[in-house]
Length: 245
Image (cartoon, rainbow, N blue to C red):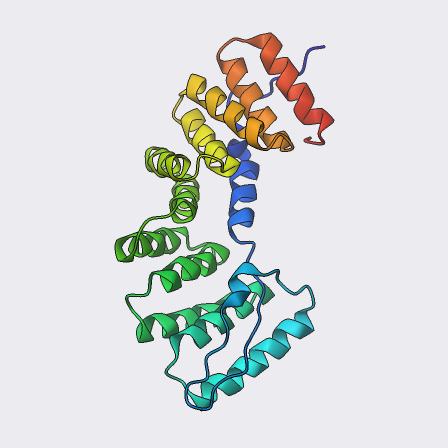
């Protein structure tokens, strides 16, 4: 059965591929708090590893709690960052940016605040600013696969595919079990015309996480460019069976 190959470019050509990555990047964590000390009220940061509350009213209540904490002691950067994350989750990105700016003013050498502010910039479609914050984060502390992958996504959105590939390669080396890193590197390789490498990266990603239809689609397009019609048809058909239209 033959599947129509509409375009020689990858799924990222219509931004579905990149958008999926950016949304994954911006799956922000939930929020939890500890009882503040009268001397130095600091909200608990355990929210960073928790699930975002789905109820907007709960988030607004948490913001109200932080308002009180911040009013009592306006010199604690973490509290602004926590409130900024809550605002960002609610879609109030302007308020989130103000809070992260305050956190960075109080702690200008804190790597985490720049990384987290980049989430806000991505939401505001200020991709250059997001990339700049991620670069600053890398300057201030040890690099991580998460930061390199986030910056690769930024470079992808800016159409700087060589830099996206370099960062994706670092992410793969630092986190060889991360399927998203292979997918990002595959996408960058595709954009640069490196179809054999694209196929290899897609294959690695599928071995780790075989449930993503987009990866079969991407590999199918790469096979098509390599004139491997049978493999291309098989992958594109698999992507369709998995629900990709």
